[in-house]
Length: 109
Length: 114
Image (cartoon, rainbow over all chains, first blue to last red; front, side, top):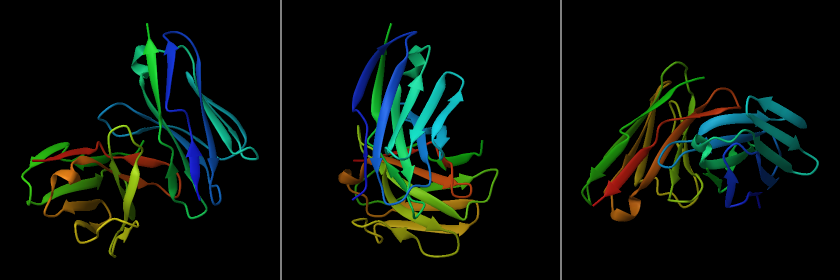
């Protein structure tokens, strides 16, 4: 079956750095997405990786290792507004999005 | 980025009535749209794939007679929850993709059936 694992919840301090991991086992791979979702709102796009390596976009970076079935989202200089759920999703061989359950990130002052 | 507009954002309806949710792609044409359902503290669950001009493809376990999907144009897909019951109360989200990559989401609809 297809499976995406990410931690349920993480806590970090304002101004610090946090890394949210995602491992996946899917039938085929056509890219991995990270989305941010605030409570009661729809997800918003953060990043897309299809090749191995690190993609940096401002305070957020996303890394992919296809051979390991592994990705992480790195958030730097954490702000209180970064408190949200972070969803990892993989596009499988049928171009269907397979979603992880999300990681709830709690930022403390 | 591309904009997907979903309406209404919140709706409360009586048990047994029907509710229609609209999803529009505002600045691009979406031949395919996706409807998700999300329960509290859970991930997105794909309900169906809506294809312009043809029947929707429903995921296993989703009742197609209860969740009617219409994709009559390249910019509009609608989801109608028929004969709603309290257990249908949930957060419904639509999305559209440009090509085979990035998905853009509507704002979501919080449905409460009383």
